[in-house]
Image (tube, rainbow, N blue to C red):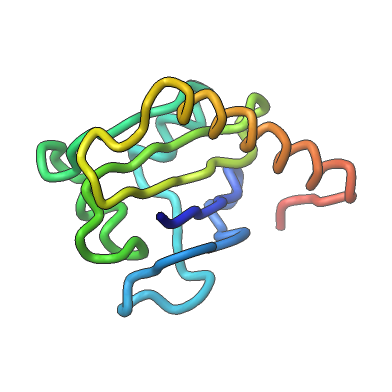
Length: 120
């Protein structure tokens, strides 16, 4: 599994934890149209089988490892942080996982704001 945290305002990579694409430099992950849409709507997006979604592999394949089958995009409630989680199993995230990811995105967002984080 891989977890990426992106700044919703600048698209800058805040954290990249776990596996990464060998072609991706550390911190090079950036928000694409699917992530931007999730941030704008403040609603999570779950791509159960990445191969079936046009643009999904192009957006997430840049920084997630090869063999990524499913992607979960969980924005924070303020729309300033998006967590992107990847799995090597199609339909690898259940409802509990999706709720956990949303709560975690809220915690990351709140922690950054409490620490005085301001987007560049």
